[in-house]
Image (cartoon, rainbow, N blue to C red; front, side, top):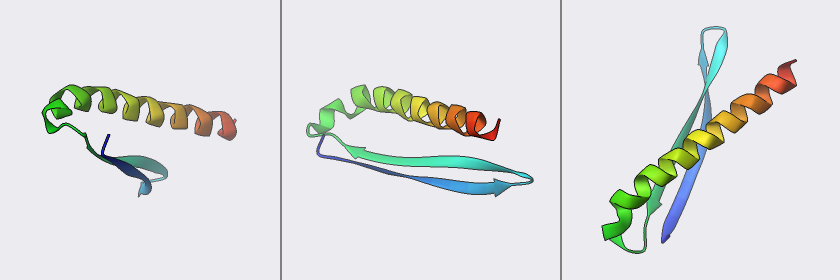
Length: 60
């Protein structure tokens, strides 16, 4: 990976909040972008799910 960076943002939504993850990556080999994108998307979804679970446990 030549570059991989992201940020979390918490946005108000009524009486709740929404967490948004923006993630940008640049593979060393540009021809691998199509292959890497689904893997990184899956990792991002797992990250957000893990965060959701931790927040819900902390709320209990």
